[in-house]
Amino acid sequence: MPKIIDHDQYRKELLSRCFDLFAEKGYSAITMRQIAEGLTVSTGTLYHYFPSKQALFEQLAEEISERDVLMAAAELEGTQTLQERLEVLGRFLEKNEDYFIKWTYIWIDFCHHQDRQEFQKSSLFKLSIERYQQAISDLLDIQDPVLVAFVMTLIDGLILQRLCANEMVSMPEQCALLGKMLTAYLEKELSNKTSNG
Image 1 (tube, rainbow, N blue to C red):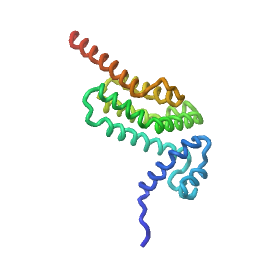
Image 2 (tube, rainbow, N blue to C red; image 1 turned 120 degrees about the horizontal axis):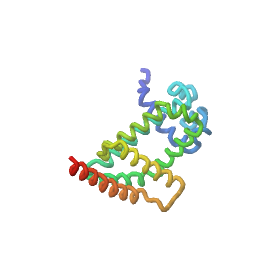
Image 3 (tube, rainbow, N blue to C red; image 1 turned 60 degrees about the vertical axis):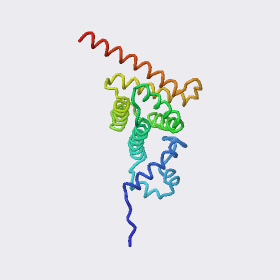
């Protein structure tokens, strides 16, 4: 009886194993042959699932952004206030710091080897940004897109600071501070609307 392969599941398994290969070598330095060797599959098998290194990376980015959102949602489940959510988010970022630093490094390396204007127009870039922004909006219950972008910028900045080994930056402390600032800001906005309404 022939072996039945769930091709979608197998593709996902290959993608999950690619993360460490990209983190170790960098997007630009690793070849499809090296990826195939690292995965212990033939290059033919790899090309069957991914027509190019860029296609592989794009599918990896999609899988990772989905997984990141699910992991964060599970971590924040049961939190009540914005302050509490941001404190939990800070601990989540710290707990997964190595992973987020590796992923940021891979993204930077990928972006460095792309035409900037073409990359900014790409659906990969837009979809990832939109997915993370929507997650921030949903998980933190923030509706203002400017505030969502602000939170995302802070998170990205924290990860970059940790990538640069800035020991002065504590993700939990910075997220707790952000929670206090946003809570005060939103309370003031609500008070202004109430008094002007």
